Image (cartoon, rainbow, N blue to C red; front, top):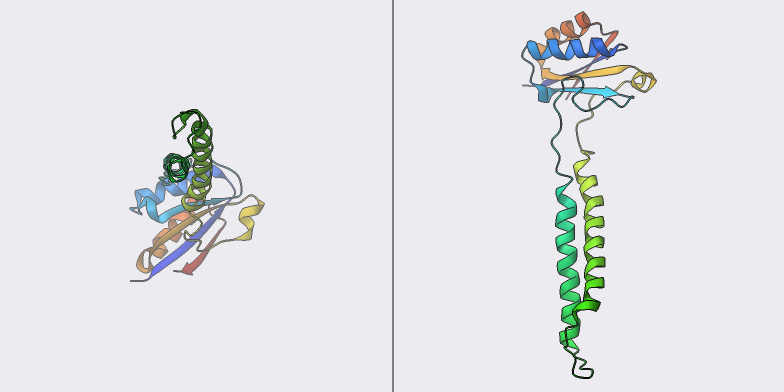
Length: 169
C-alpha cells in the first residue's frame, strides 16, 4: 500500500486550525499530520502531535560520565604514581574537587550538544515543500494511503486551502 502526501497551503491560521480539526474528525491519525510554517507558532498550537523529547536527560548522563571520567583520571593518576609528601594522604580530595567539577561540567556540556543534535529530528521526513511557506503561508502536511487522498484534498480545500500539492512517499 503506497502512501500519498498532500500539502495544503493556507494564509489564515484559523483555516489551518479548522483543517487540522476536520482531518482529525475524518479519522486521520495525528502522527500523519504536520504543520510547516515560517513563523514560530508553539508546538501543538494547531492540534498537531507534540513531539516527545528527552533533551533534559542528556546533560545528566554527560555529567555522570564526566564526573566518573574525572574521578578515574585523578584517582588513577595519584594511585599509579604515588608521591607521598610529608606524610599526607596519596589521594588528596580538595584539589581533586576542582578537576571533578570541571569534568562534570565538560561532560554535561558535550552531552547537551549531542542531545540537541540527536533530538532535533533532523533526519525526519521532509516530504512536500513549497517556497511560499517562507513568505507567510502555513502548510498542512498529510500522509495517507492512496485511496484516502481525494478525501483529504477535499477536506483541505473546504477548510480554505489556496493550493494543494501532491506527492508520493
